[in-house]
Length: 357
Image (cartoon, rainbow, N blue to C red):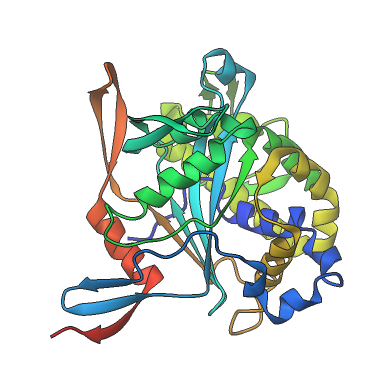
């Protein structure tokens, strides 16, 4: 089942690969990247499950796919006061297939139950112990942005996407963005017009105590720094709860990405780069950004252009949620359907080879 991505999906792909890398300005420096884009990527994690046998069919891992973990970090003052800072409330695996110019984005619910999260000693980088928690805690237990938060999240999600060791979807790189940067982003773009998919009247944000009304289903509303907070953060019942927040973030970011394409990458990136440099952390190099900028420009698509609506596969990890007690605390956990996830990953990241007799 392919559904809308949860948070920070298309925009992160467009912004991260285009803005920080300054690909437009760096083409002349890295001309070789355009000729051999994969040469920019020194894949750090060797494949351990290159072949999978399923239902008398052999599947070989597809080469030429670069996997980047996108993390949306919410570190508002209110969250930090409640010891909730540094949680990766957005977790997306973004895969760039250089064979056909397609992108696959897999959204992992932040409340996913996970019993293999490493707790890292921030001084040494060593694993102190392994614990059970929500999957978005991996970033926190790695020490956050100034220690090993992203690396710990990469390790955790790599194990998660192995579907209990049945296959491998290695995470090669990461890019994280602080959600605090979205208001500046909206203003840098001159506001972002979003068509509401549900009524949004008297939307309350318990963290800030602010109530905002946006309009009714079908209305077009301009999102700016003045009204974005409740739109992308509120999980109130009037906003549709957790799923509603995911939808509103997706709508904002899809609309922002399309506006960037309409304005043209050069014009948009000139305005956005200073904002993005403040709020994004990544282990991607300049050369790699250039390769990804080439990708987003459509150099590897069959028709020579990258279309957000046509060339993206968006998928949300399926499953069910329930209240349960873990480590003495009763909380809501999402339990992923690993069999369904496995079937999707096998189709997207492996190619059928030959029948087994």
